Image (cartoon, rainbow, N blue to C red; front, side, top):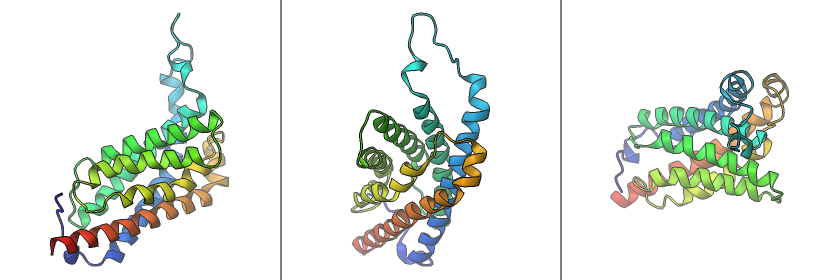
Length: 210
């Protein structure tokens, strides 16, 4: 484990959490809208709607899953970038954080939607999707923070709302008009859970060093 900054050198753990929450709100809200935009307006130019003769490549993935991949990918890029800025602001250099977010959110969204389409219920698809997100980020975190496994639990709980509320069948404008507030609330929820956990883990890591 290699902590690259000591919590005592930071302004306060509450400051880190505040920036972290704001970053998550912007990334979740912006990522959902960006993902829908890319799918609705750009994807048709690149996607071969008919499989090559004798092959079943693109048709193996249902349309809602494809849309969730676009949204997850967009959220992962924005989340990774904005959270990286927060980390750098507080002198924390975590290699691979952006990639971990891109992979975790993309596969997490795809898994949650795919399992739900297969008939899985009772929130299990969302919990497993959140676990994928958490584990992907934990692979990076475990190199820098003690007891980083708590991050997985924070992601599972925090991401449950956004994995449940994304209206994949709605257009970009419909989401913007009707679902802006729920999406912002979902970003707030995951920001609070992961931000509080980040502050705790930084504190524990600092105490162990001292």
